[in-house]
Image (cartoon, rainbow over all chains, first blue to last red; front, side):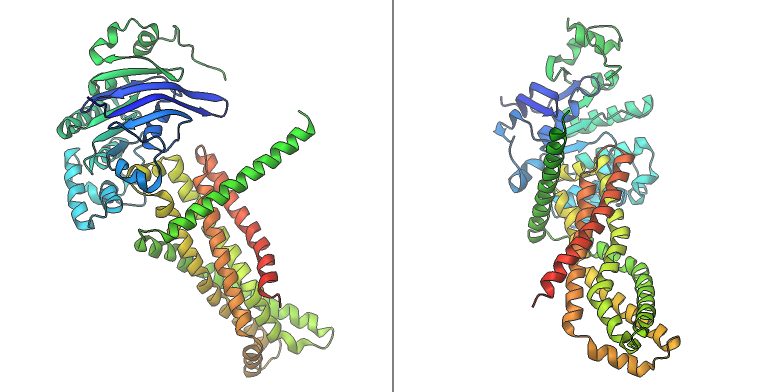
Length: 255
Length: 257
């Protein structure tokens, strides 16, 4: 079976810092992979490389078995339609009302009529537990948790095959974080989508993933089914999932 | 580090910046001519860039025309040439001061606003979000602003020119003893269409510079609030410098005979 997404030896350097140093990763269709790792280990860079926002220096990225590493411009458009993404800060367009945010990909990306796109937007908002009065508010009027939900509705609006979640629970209270986790699981299972998430919230990682991979030093140092994360036998993984200051991972307190 | 390394690095940085700007300009121009056309966004930007700049452009044009009339009268007085006021006012305003002052005012108002808006979108990942929603950020954000600025600046300048000439007329007839009808006839008889058109061409170029600088610095802003602040400042400063520099070049080209 071809993996939905495959990364082979992906490297990326920013100035003197080698952020990704040969990342190998494969995500099977319909499964959910969570990449864990500390801040600044290149989790976001990994997602942005797949999205084509960042161009890797070396390595290959395959989607449905097709090499898309260097696809740009017009030829990338059909690929982008397979993707949906929930950004860390939700990244809602603050000049547009909530419904137009959700409908954005349908109207601008696919040229759907506004009235029809609005109906779909309101339906997607209902899916993430937001009523239709929210649709006409501006994003600035919403709380952080509601913005995340709108971001989720926007990510799933065009029924993408692949959804990326960048720190979906960061900055939320524990209850709202769990609500978002439940919504992610519910909507994704519902759609049968393949997902790639990055997080350092272990509760969230356990809840939304089928498989977990840990990124450290620009490489994937461990990956396996979520159930096996507690008996990985990897001291780096153990230190991370238990949140210990002492261990093989030395945090650079001073730069 | 030795001094040659410093000089070398500065030169390389400058060349890299010029290269980035050229690339950005090229991508923006290519995006203008390729579909889709966002008519609704162009309309919105027309209001933001053109219509809402009318008060500040009108006010500065009025005072410029008035001061110009006064200065030329006082200067001309030394040679007994004070009757030249209407001709010099209309020439100065249409060829030079109208477009340049409108350009500088719009640079302060619009380049700053564009850089701040796009810069904030950049640091809050809204520009990345556009990409994930199958929308080309250059086409969606840059093209409407460029088109609206290039189209609205000549209109703004034409209105500013009229107000500027009126400012000179008001001072000349109220304070300097000119007869209204004579002043107007001298103005209309003296100004040629090439004076006016050259000014409007300049205005269109200045509009392009302002929108391009606002977008370029917004797209390249880094970090948080501080980065957006720096982008805003750079957008205004670079617009003003480029307006003044291109004004010289354009004048040399347009009036070379």
